Image (cartoon, rainbow, N blue to C red; front, side, top):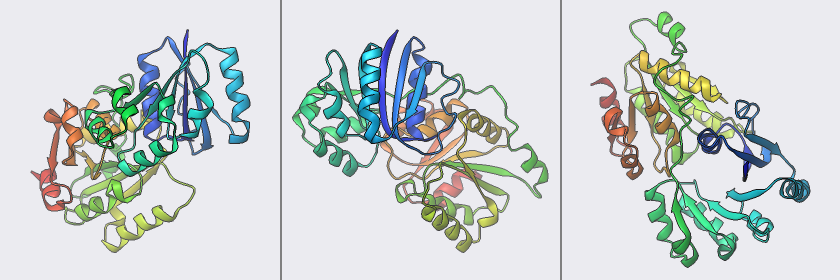
Length: 323
């Protein structure tokens, strides 16, 4: 069996877990040894994958863990995400193909990571879209230019598919008075994800539109409090449901249930390197309404199920939900 070492700071149910699950589903013959620095509510996220062994290891113990993995199993490649210091630890290991991956859409974060790592020691730089490849090339790093590869993220088709359970919103629909349209939103409570636009859009929609906000909650509750405060100030707090730390199978059920009840996935992101929530919703045949970003052209199903409006235009966004 071939083996991959996969490293990322946070063990969570966020986008990077989807990256790893997609690869493990596509390559059942490959074992993935996933190393994380911090536990961020990721319990159980890989339980259905016998070819993923995930460990959260304190930084002061990681050298010993790496030595064990590399001496016990034949590791032929390593994928490093958001962890420049790991390049120094792994670049000297013989016969390991070293890949550094960029999944952030924030080019300032990408630039900062590049500045902190020794690019000449990396065998391949990986991004999930042609759009991000062009942005990375614009930084002018000669090592990146010669070693850049686009590897489209994979959606776990065993989970995110058109057919399957679709009863998540049934009780809410029965209890609704005058109608019920679920609007799903998946992301983090930061400015780049544009949650304020979701709330403002909701405030001009009829009251039977209800937003279900799927997030990985953070230890610091400040941003969650800010989100809830803004919802209250706009008068939509009673039409917002925060659903934390959702298992992928439940998320897929939510997408299909939203489709059954004539709902949508809303993406208010202002930047995306790939857009996992959109890709997974499209795989479940849920309609998507999003701010127009270049990367949507790389999702073929967006033409069938998606409509894009100008970034920040909440009135066009709202109109796309009622027409």
